[in-house]
Amino acid sequence: MKLTAQKRTLVGKKVKNLRAEGIVPATIYGPKRESENIQFNEKDFEKAFEKSGFSKFIELTVEGEKSTRVLVKEVNYDPIKDNILDISIYDIDEDRKVTVDVPINLEGESPAVKLKLGFLVQQLETVAVYCLPKDLPESFTISVNTLESTSDTVALNDLQLPEGVEFDSGVDPTSSIAYIATAQKEEELEEESAEGSESEEGEEGEEGEKEAGESSEEEKGE
Image (cartoon, rainbow, N blue to C red; front, side, top):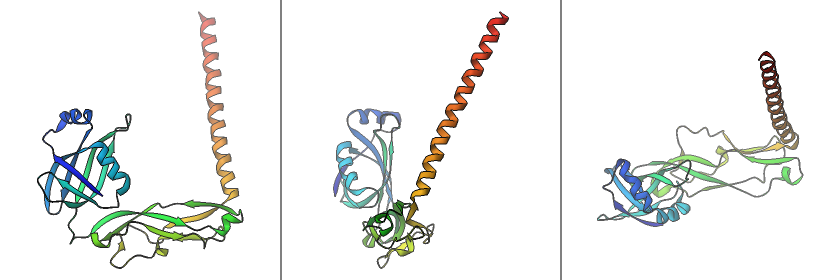
C-alpha cells in the first residue's frame, strides 16, 4: 500500500479549515526523526487505512522526502460527525523492534457448535506482539476444530509464533482466544437482560405514580 502526504503548516484551531477541504491533519514521529506535522487527502488515507488497519505497513512518501515504511498508530474521530480529526503515524526503524496488535482469525468448525452443545465466543480479536518489522506477521489463524465440548478452549499459547516473534511483555499467553459457551448460559444472560429491563420499567412506573400522587396532593392543598 502506498500513500502520499504533504507537510503541514497550519496548526491549532486553523486545522478545521483543512478538514473542510477534505484534508486531515496528522503527526509523524519515530526513532530516527523528530515529530513533524503532515496532512493527508482524507479519501486517500481512508482507502489505505481500510487495507492496512493498525497492523500492516504503508509505504509513505512525504513531499520532498524518500518513501518510508510506517504504521498507523492512532486515528481519532469526531464522536458526532464520525469524520477523522487527526492521525498519528509511526515511522519505523527497520533495525528496531516494534509492538503491534496483530489480528487473530478463527477457522474451521467446532464439533460442539455442530452438535448444538453451545455457541462459539471469540474473546480476543488481536494480540500484541514484539518483533522486528521484517518479521511482523499480517495475522494469526487458529482452528476451532478442537473445541468438542463446553470445557474446551483455545488460548494464545496455542498460536504458532513465527521465528523472531514474541508476545509483548504485557500479554498473558494463557489468555483464552475462543471457547464454547453453553446454550443454557446464553438463555440465562438473555433472561437477566430482560429482567433488568423490566425492573427499570417498573421503577420508572413507580416513580411516575409517586410524582402523580405528590402533584395531586399539592393541588388539593391549593
